[in-house]
Image: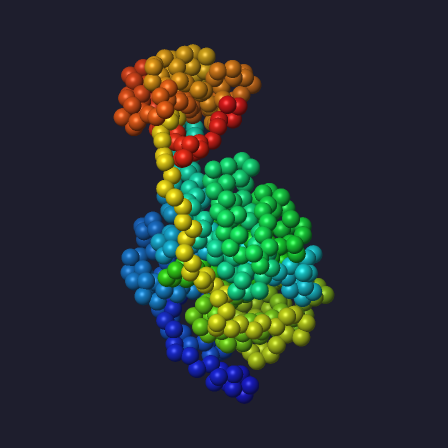
Length: 494
């Protein structure tokens, strides 16, 4: 205990206000364990506690957070959050997504390390970091049920958002002595959205000649993370793919329960475990607090208490190395003692001041930009000349015959438009469709302007004429070119 007190005395930091949420399910247990370790190690914090999650949802607040809680978050700008539960159904929005987007937390950083042989894994040399875009993609949550049988979700990718996250990944690599950044997309299919992300990656990679770079399609990328994760260093990817592959990586390393996560913005930051609230094991003192603790270690580095982060991380590594494990990572042979949540936290506290003998000890530095990107000017791009050259008119109807509907839609185009095709769920069914194609009640008529350009006024007139003909129009999407390059994809079979 004398050694612990001596180490604590060296941590003379001004207390940092942080916002804390104890969450749902196992959240209160692992938060209590984590805060106990932080206190024992001498972390200088001034916690402000807020209620979020299930209890707030059940009070009728569909966002899961009361307005007053935002005051604390906007004041401290540092959030340590335990997992929460979002009730099923009822129009409840994901609070995690809401917080990330509201506070501009564009970078989700998820380090994943193998602790072989002390935690069972087939990949002893795994040490990678996934940098996930956190605000865009399908997680924008813009969904519509367009017909009785078809719903849509909009995938939104911006150049600005892509540039921020890609540059963050390269800055992270530079600041943490990483050698390579791998971009993961699905731009062989989504050529405009994922294609934009990949294009931005290639542009920014030229600014960092000292860092290797490569690109993988997400399906083979996920397969290689599961099979040969040691080939990766830093991965940067879009929101949905990042969510999926970071859980794959954590499980491959030994347990999802070990991984912490930081969510970084230009003004605020949130730190958490990557796992959920696991209500099925709540209150049983068996949950592993390591994920949240590792998130808290990232928080300490972020707020300038790197010495405390080093103290805790090395104590945690020592605990893992000595085989004191919770049930999720307990394995005959590599584990020595199975413990509960409280006992694991106490074991870490008892090892404060110790360093691992086999695992690599950690040494954090306050001047290491481990979590924060170095601001740089955005890439300058000239303003593109935009022209509206056509329109996709979406309409609905069950049991429609394309050979009957096609001539009707063609006639509607008149002298203004040529009907290029009719598609059903993206597949061309007129002209020259196949009888084997399955039809839903979701149709699209693609009109190309006979003149070089068209206008919104002409498009609205076309839609009005279609309605007069008894066509049930759902919506329209303008077809545009930018400096003469098509800003729309071809239909399948077009």
